[in-house]
Figure 1 (cartoon, rainbow, N blue to C red):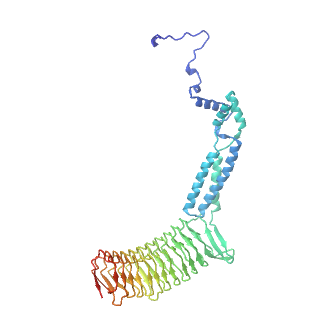
Figure 2 (cartoon, rainbow, N blue to C red; figure 1 turned 180 degrees about the vertical axis):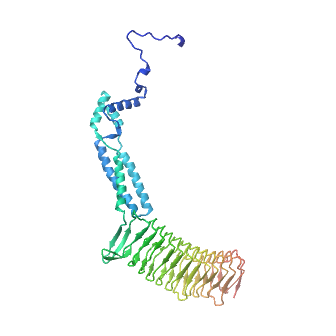
Amino acid sequence: MESPENFNTPTLIPGKILVKPENFDSVYSLSEDKMLESIINSELNKLSVNDINSLVPDYIVRRKEILNYILSILIFVFVSSIFFHFWLKFYLIWIAILWVFAIFYAIFTRFNLMNYIIKKLKENPKDKISDVVLYVKNEINNKYNNSKIWLYILVPIIAPLFIFLHPRIFYEWTGDWYAARIYTFWVLNYKTAEIPETYNGKPVVSLRGNAFSDMYLLESVKLPDTLKEIRGQAFKNCVSLKSVNIPKNLEYLGWSAFANATSIKSIVLPDSLTYLWWEAFNWAISLQSVVLSKNLTEIRWDTFRDCISLKSITIPDWITRIWGSAFNWARWLSEVIIWENSQLEEIGWTAFYNATALKSIIIPDTVQRIWWEAFYWASSLEYVKLPKNLPEIRWDTFEYCTSLKAIDIPDTVERIWGHAFYGDSSLSLVNIGPGSQLSEIWSSAFRLCPRLYNISIPSRTIVNERAFKESPTSILRF
């Protein structure tokens, strides 16, 4: 073999041209697949098809039209629902539905003209590429404008803005009067709202549940005095609500009516109110002042739970029961006023749990039951007057009342349950009179009371061996 330096340029045959690689079309230097696509694109350009995505078969056009209408409906419903202020989970579900639909849309309207032509070429390998491209172009002659999709998206977004340009109130006819069922957001003003006194010439007597719930930007509401009831969750999660007039004829305030209304500072409940349901003001963390109806008979579960700004409460005389957790975590509640004529019979489980600012409380003699943990962790509580007819002091009632220095145990108390005064580090005096009927002191009742050096109890009282564990207490019997 000759070395490169001895290699001679071939002699050209007269009349012939030396062909070099650069003389060929660059397309032939591509891979087989890329070369085929380039040739097909060239043929499509000759047929004035510059956008291969613009040609789709009839069945794809029909699918897109149907799915576009469905998409518009879904978007319209979703955007309109925003004005109805549903709960957050509802919108998350709708977003998931739209996302799934978008994936479904992409899959079922997918069509690739290039792949379709290549498929036809493989089915007819002897045909010219130009003939196959021409055949496909004539077969699929639908030019679909993909930009139309924006029309189907924008129209259902804009339409609700005009529909809810002004407030809309949906009413429920009861036969004699109307109930305001739901109040929608409105574009021009989303901070204030008003319910009229009448509708179609009839009075508006009721505000239904969730009528204003989850209206996060709502600041002020005006209610008519014709209202006699505000149903459950009517203003729940209205975190910006600062002002609302309670109708002077209101009789019923429902479950969680103002729950999580974190900006409201004061509430005056009219004396016409006879039903105040649980969690009515739960987590109303800015609530500082409350005037209760004189005709209430119960303060129910969690009514003022987590009202951490509430400083004082007066319990009306007709209240017979303060239910469990009624003032749970009302950390700044420093004053609970219960008048001498009170008919109170029961204080529920964790009613004043963690009311860390409460310093004293006089419990009327009408009270017959104080449930467990009623004053658990009321760490500022210094003075408690127990009712003279109390039959027992239950589990954890005064646990971790670290400021409590002395307690008088009524003669009627027969049992002090476990952990009743657990961890009361300031407790130094427990007065048990000679007429006491105390029969049992349970485990850890006075555990971790480092200042309780002595206690006198009846001779018949059974004391659990752990009742004074980790306390320096000497037991004297009489």
